[in-house]
Length: 297
Ligand SMILES: [Zn+2]
Ligand SMILES: [Zn+2]
Image (tube, rainbow, N blue to C red):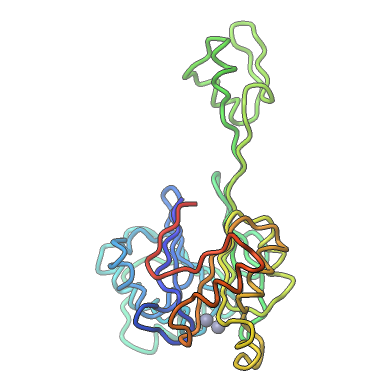
């Protein structure tokens, strides 16, 4: 699994930081979270073909998270994108999308499916599920988590004792069913090792809220906004609708997450050293994202 940060800035981009977007690659899936202005260019720089995108998860309709969408969709049309782009977003997403289409000549050359989501699991297949929770921002906003299914791995040392190697029956064991081979009963609990699926949570614009904590619970990786250092937050974020580095770190700690990556930084910060230092005081395993940074999960 690979996560690539395409943009790590908040409202205003800087020379080194583009607007918010990231993309998670898992098997045949390219799951993009937000698509700020200039995301297409960032994809180019990261050598990622936009046609790899299968799902677009929108946290909310503030410009820094969505202004790249029309351009991206037009490029997909020009690239003979043959999949159906699945777009998920909070209440109002369908209407915002239609309004955007009406505001200029926008030929829709790809298939897409828009789903408005709020709370709970909204996508599930044999490998993973996606869940959302409403956040507390000044417009409808959701956060997302990706949860890989727990898997059973064959304990080959054990199964070999029965001469059982590369056999279709192994598939049955992996599905959690006991089997009988050459008269021997082979039980799942002896012949397999449980492998816990990875959980990645993406929390963008929000104040500190209980839903953020619920969604982030036991994440292997928590990606969270840290727009300000805490002292600045009190001066500049009058409505307190963003997380500071300190709050993001507290969230990682209390939720029992293993690793924290911060993003969505204010243009005020030339470097993220102060933000990182503040977060690390509370949660040591923290990294500040950089544009085009790729992380193996
Ligand atoms: Zn934002
Ligand atoms: Zn916002």
